[in-house]
Image (cartoon, rainbow, N blue to C red; front, side, top):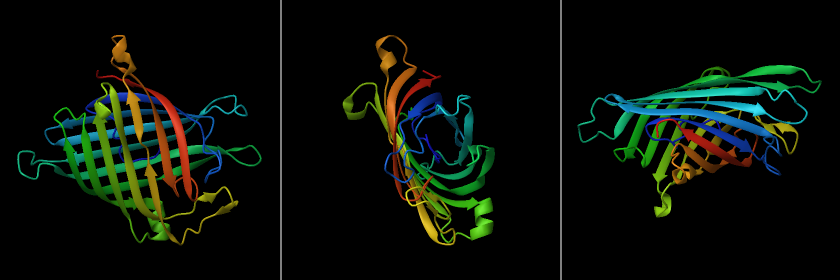
Length: 261
């Protein structure tokens, strides 16, 4: 999983996902993402006043040069949709508030461990959601004002907006147990990101846009042996100016356990 607004791959309930990242050869980060395992704990619950979505990502380094295999990044998002008009003609439109933030560790050139923060971000805007009664099929559009605390104070973004599209389709292509889901995030930001190919860093005074999308395919393999909680699947992360300058593609394999099945 990456840093996202909605994972979009759950219906009402809680699940745990474990991914192995194969890396990104010959793209922006030039295999920077290999030898990594990510766990994602994710929840989504609707109620009479709207819905709550949250997730926590933790990345683990399993590179042979780091035999400790320690966690090195933690990131969380929590989003609340407010909707007091669910019995009206505009019931599909909600007001959304959201928080993003996290922290990480890295090893510098001399081998010392150093830390960094993923800036606090507060978002507010509108959420338009179409879904079936059980939320197993969902199509969601969001338009949010994004206030990145430290980044805004330093660089004064010209386009502090984020557009998000979330989808989830159960029994995809009429195949029982197959789910196609994911999200697409696009936002504007003045930022400096490393260009791993050229050994440079982008100019933080120039306005950039960031794109991140993570389509997933899950198959409920546990349905064959009376364990509907168990799923296996894949995720492919496509990004532009996210953790490195330019385009990046990261394929992953994973398993998922749904606690509410």
